Image (cartoon, rainbow over all chains, first blue to last red; front, side, top):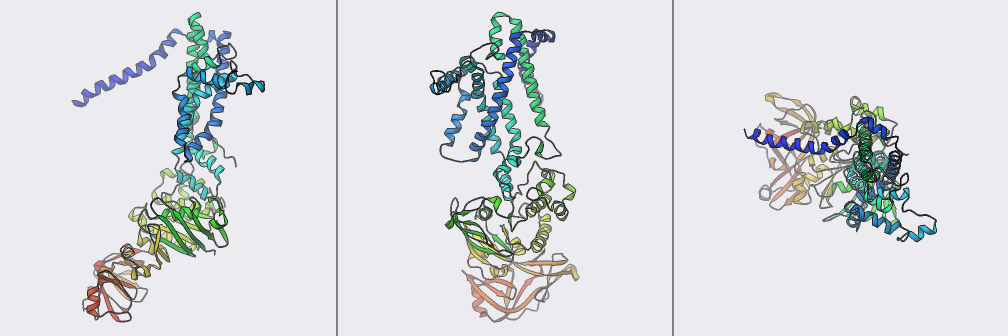
Length: 273
Length: 341
């Protein structure tokens, strides 16, 4: 009796949560039929925004992986004075309001910013270029990856890494053949989070990079711009963003769940040596 | 064959580990948990760096703090078997074994009876199988010294006695210097020629298993080393008893069942000493000369032939025992345990 009494509110809560989380997405697609969506793909504003979004997100993710992974590994594997402070600094962009992140980027890389004169001397101007979009995305999204990656590296049994060393493998071979494959699941989870955050990035981008069609106008920025002008276009782009995110996240999932169960770790991360 | 020599100091959390030993064959370090046993192996393998000292295998110097030599773990030829084995969970058994050396993988898979699980991941293996994979992996690397961290601790009682026999045979056939750390004196005595007692980072006593039982330097060593271990050959006798012919020629009886090479385990406090033997057929009798008498407070350890008895100091006085005197040591068949060797 008691169980049945508790079961009803339990399942009710589950149903409400599920409905709440899926309803907006479903609603979006009731407004945007597939035909309408395909029709909008001919719209220059939409295709420009899609291309800018994909390009900047992918480049930012590559940068996040390339620079974030060594940083996360260092923070996970070394103990040194000031480490907690460093971890906090790395995580700070996560809690910064996006507008503040945009201001910070301008203050650092803007013409009048900290590095502005140096960059000027080199003939480089970052604000309101595609580079600015990439920097904004990397800045707000990388902490999600680095944070998760630190945890992933820390979860690798130190004895297993030590065993690799005693078996004659140097630090590099140990990293690529043991530590990286064992942390791969966590790294991918962090990457998925960073990816999702980056694709939806809005605040820092609009302040630091502006919203120039075909240059810095990503899908979220284009949706905001179209919102006042043509709601149908905005809805179509919204649906498009949902489809793109879902496809990319699903493929990431598939790549990961295809953990080659019979072969060794070779497929995902080939040893360098 | 090269000798492993280790002489170093390493500050641990609450004490300093100081070790000086040479291993030509198998040496076991036995001590309570937290005595620094694992740190000894890690220091030799290069996983932790001693504050000062020297570690060498024959002419190969692995560590010499005075001369600034400190080889990386991958440049020391050690076969370290971790207590929890530390197998690579993402690699097959075959890839685990072949990680450090691919030349003899098939031979080792067969030798360690893990050929049938060669394509499995370590996660699905039993404890005994995991240990054999860890041993095979360490040996495939072609080490100059074998380091075993609690090789029998993670196994259930049944597997343990089997593995102990296998380990003995393996250590003998490899002929490498080996260092074993364990908390179990019986395991140490069964596996090693030399046993050291490690307490709070310090080797209290180093000697043969017989020496440690007969002449413990202090009460701690005495309580840790506990039992006598007499080697012999067991066959079944009348009345459900097992007769064991000792290496010294004497025959003793046990209520345990065993056949073949065994160790007879007898605790010193279960052994009585007399000038003449009580004519009691239920008693095992070992005649011999007193080798040594070591006083430990009100008790004394008296060595008679291969056996050590623990008696009160008062009875040493009363019986007028002194080294060289002839006595009879006796113990009950029910006071013995037989362990396979």
